[in-house]
Every structure is written in structure tokens, then in C-alpha cells.
Length: 188
Length: 185
Image 1 (tube, rainbow over the protein chains, first blue to last red):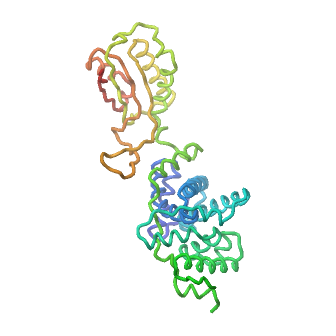
Image 2 (cartoon, rainbow over the protein chains, first blue to last red):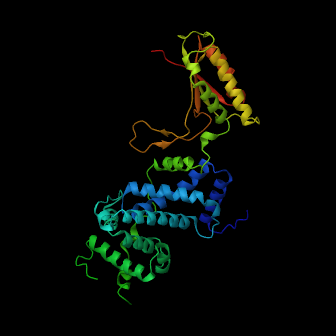
Image 3 (cartoon, helix red, strand yellow):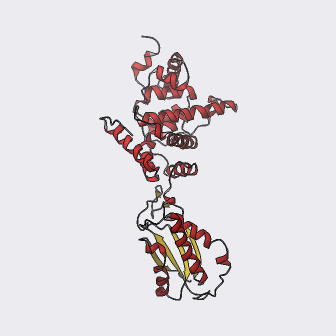
């Protein structure tokens, strides 16, 4: 197999970890991959799930299951972290579709959410406020403000128009600031 | 500038959030278990030598041994119990089929002599708890001394138990067997 090793250390390490795992599908090799990327996936899953730890655990489990199923197709064209994040996002979208089909809506889920453990009051506030946003707006906010995606990229990943991404981002930021007490009036 | 740019200029409240968070310690084992259950992972538990060991132990635990062996016990059914704790991976070029045959033959031989009181293979996963700590349990790491299975044999003395252990094929191929008397109290 021909593998191009990028100059950046992280992709190079990731490709080496992937190659090692694929050589024998060994548990220890998988655990090295898991430990390198799960802190990122966990933070992403926890926020996508609005702070629900059990939902985030299921997301991470399903994400790794799908990733391992198709890891032999990963060639390093994108960073492994982005690749895994994309899979996690798809798992979340599918789960959301199921919940919608069962009759739940974003508002009901947001009302009953826990928040992740915090390291300080500011972070607790932000994480809590994130959990109170509607799922669709929160996802756009995370993808744009934390993941650094453009509206076009967000539109592709979430199956929405770029314009919808923009308006959701606007609403999410406004909602977040309102929940944080930074924009009491909440006027657009 | 349109209305959407107003908050972009003000910065995002998410800017200070950490990109990584420590996942629950038990999550790793759950992910590994799911992958193994779907055949996506070669578990440590299926290391080559464990296959014959598991096969041998399955035969021994099949019922006939523990219900009573065909030959009278050599050491007596009330003789002290000794734990033969197996660890480390033997080095051999023998085929898996051959290893299964060898391990099974040894187990049946010990049972026929009335020495065998029990046998089990341990699952590969496990956790390690430290005294006094409220922190998360550590995932079991495997090394030369990590137990992977055991035989429980009856013998009249530690020397006799040692003699039994020395005939175990696990030891013959470079594995390790720890012999420990079971406290009768």
C-alpha cells in the first residue's frame, strides 16, 4: 500500500496508527487510536448532545464502530480528526431523525438536558447555555465557531442551504448571548 | 456588513471552550467490547495459545469431570486445593489444532487421576482499583504476570501441586504457572 506521509506530525502519527491497526486489527493498536482522538470526539459529542452524557456515549460508540468498519478506506486526504468528526456528526443527524420520527422536538430535549462537568463557572455557563439551544442551531454554532467550517461546508454536512446555516448561526449566537445574560433584550 | 456579521465581530462565547474533554474511563472498554462483538477487533483474549486453553477448559467444565471422574482421586476428594494460575504467552510453532489436542489431553489426564477440581479461562478485559482513591478504575494492562486462566487441582502438598504444574503444557511452551495453596479456612 502506498501512503503519502504529510509533513505535519499529527497526520503522520495518525496514518502510522491507522496502518498499525489495519495490520492486525489488534486491540492495543485500536486503543492507541481511541486514546488519541476520543477526548476530541467526546467533547464534540457531549456538546452535540446538549450535555447528555448517555447520548454522547452512544454517539462515540457508534462513531468508532463505523470508523473501524471503513478505516481501510482512510487515506489521509483529510485529517483523521476531521474524518472522525464527520462520522460522529452523521451519527448524531441520524439519531435526531429517529427522535423526530418518534415525535420528540428540539425544545423538549433542550428542556431536560444535563450539562457536562465544568472546570470553572464561565465554562459551565457556556456549556449550559449551549445545551439550551435548539439542536439545529447548536450544531451550526459548534461547526462554525468551534470547528471552523464555512457555511457552505456546514450546509453540505447538515444537508441544509448555506443561507439556512447563516440564519441558524445568527439565531444561535443571539440565543447563547441571551442565556449568558450578555444580551438581555434578545433583539436581533 | 449585514446583520449576521454583528456577532462575528463581537467574537464567539465558544472561543474559550476546550476542544477536548476527558471521556468517561469505562467508555473505552464499552467501545472495545462493541467492536469485538461485531467482529471488528481481534481481542487479546483470542491470542493463539488461549484458544487451546479455552478448548481444554471447556472440555473439563463440560460436566463429567465435576460430577465425578472414572478413576478414584489420587489425592483424595478432601485433599487441599491448589490454584495453578496461568500467565504469559507460550512460544511455539505448533498448529492451533495440535495445541488444542495437547492441552485437552493434559486436562483429561489430570481429571482421570482425580486431581482436577475446576478450570476457567479469564476474560481479557478487566479493571484495576487502587486503595484509597476515588478516581476512575484503570484499564487492565497485560504483561507477563497478568493471569489469563487457572486450573484448580487437589494435591496432598505444595510439592505434589508443583509436580502437577510442571506437567502442564502451558509451562512446556514457555508460559508461566503460579502455584498457590487455597487457604482451607
